[in-house]
Image (cartoon, rainbow, N blue to C red; front, side, top):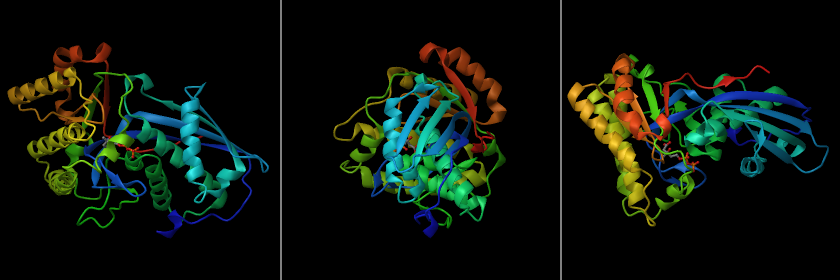
Length: 359
Ligand code: DP6
């Protein structure tokens, strides 16, 4: 797709502001390992979330030939670390959005979840930023012939910021990476899964149990890199591509027993890759394991198809069908909260995707 890379013609962009609210996502099939410029080593698939969101407003103004400058505020407070990160990202995008060099930016961002709880905010944050850049392009250059093109480009840009962010551009189930048999799938951007999806997956619940909220010691970026030298990585990529086919059939058959098996195996394999990297590392905490054991006992006793997933961290995503919500919440309160940090749980669910802010 040419328009993804094409340089926009020069045009003066006046002062203005744009804003988007964009969700986080939880991968059922994990992306861990990448090649070239942010291309995944295997396909992944995620649920977009409904409550864990980043809201970003970008104010921009012409700088009349002066150097590009950017200020970043998180929850109203100036944040140098993010400013530097986003500046580097913007500079890398100048070929795609030449207007970046003509403008100064004031970016205000806030998360609906407390940033101190240790949930990854890069997916929601980077997708929101990508949407605002595409919004400037849409507003002043009028280059998109459809909404589909707009979101595809936003996903492409989000991917360059953080791989998993490219799956946050659509609601429901979203894939990223080439999948055999799915023509719309691509390594360059995420795509909404168009398939016969069993209704149970449209209302799936995700209760996020915060086990530890301290900043993780190993960045995802470094973790991905270590897959290049992990002796098990090729087997893992093969397994992932096999698992995605299994998961796709589960999504259309509604076989929740199989769903549980694939999702938990993916989470544990992700952490097994960390443990078999050189240097090796462990991101799970003792309470992560205690929660996993309790989930397994509860599932065996009740036959409720509740399962867990993990990101690159110690926190548990508890996934279950909406119809089991009351029993699972009672289980969380009585058996799992004691393993969390200050009884912190965020009840989330499958969401409908980003929304433009009317400013
Ligand atoms: C474990 O998307 O955070 O959450 O592309 O380097 O920004 P970068 O990595 P990132 O990796 C997330 C990995 C994961 C699994 C997943 O979301 O698929």
